[in-house]
Amino acid sequence: MIAAIKNDATDWGSMKQFVEIPGALLLKLANSQELPDLRAAGVTEQSEIRINQHGDIEMLQAGDWAIIGGLLGDYKNRIKRLTGLDWS
Image (cartoon, rainbow, N blue to C red):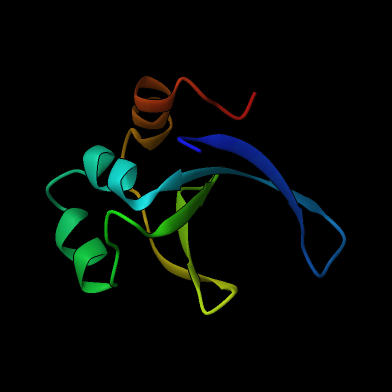
């Protein structure tokens, strides 16, 4: 899978949408401010990543999704340009 929009129900019963991408794609769309933090959080090209509409980044670790950071600035357009996907 290169990228996909997925829905995930939270504990509160609301539905969140995520763009799921591999770590390699996240590292391509990250800007120079974000890249060092992503690498420090353990993101590799093989990581399984999802990003919600607020720019929060989650990585699959030991079978659970863990928030590892966030994207800054024009992240929605960067994701759309790179994957062709958006949340609309």
